[in-house]
Image (cartoon, rainbow, N blue to C red):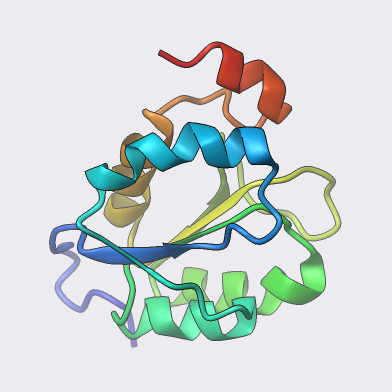
Length: 138
């Protein structure tokens, strides 16, 4: 069953940001942007629980720093097959085992774009090392 049966997305409502592993400078850059999202809810502390919560509409998105395959591969496949989008912060596809940090999972491609614009100003270079893209912000 697709996450959006009629192919249309509703407005961005709520999501979670797993801050546990975020470097302090990345967290510092994201925090002032949190008011751009109507509601940030506490993360479920397990990526395996976040993906079903997104697919069922309980959340519209989740932001992760660590991208370990055992945490994300099953959920990324599940959510993508259900019509959602899982990609790195720069918009590139998530590939299991590929190095790097930063992952955004969303209920639909529209939710992914809206979250990306809200939290990362739509920057395509935000998956670079945290210190380089943060210096270039605003």
